[in-house]
Image 1: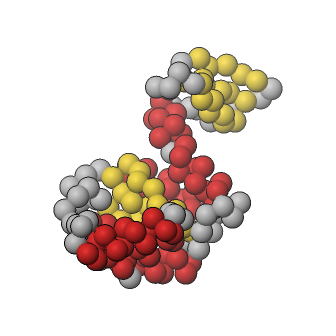
Image 2 (image 1 turned 60 degrees about the horizontal axis):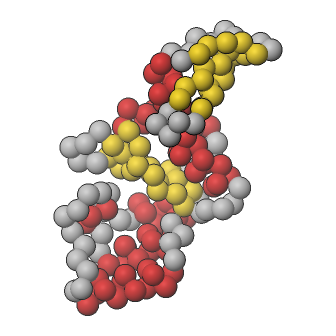
Length: 156
């Protein structure tokens, strides 16, 4: 890790697994800890999803994140006034974070919090709300209804 200063800002450059550099910036007064750098890197996709939602690219997002970041995730969603729903994975240190338009979140609230417990109709609705290919969702729905594809005990 390299720490330096640029016009009043501290920065840390970290090489991630993909050999790309990631820069985390904070004011001079802030001490940047290794945990903050890890959180910044772990939540990059989550933060990109917020960007996509705010730009109108998506109406509903589902992301699975580490449970240890729950408070940071909730804080960021509340700060941005984004409706959300968080479901915990049973026996794992992961959470499913749904966020987006209020009506989409309200539909998701009517479903089982366990994704592997959804019925064919809920599975179809969730896929469409998440923006998956509608024809592929129709084919999936018909496969589930005909018994060719089984929903059930899989990973959340």
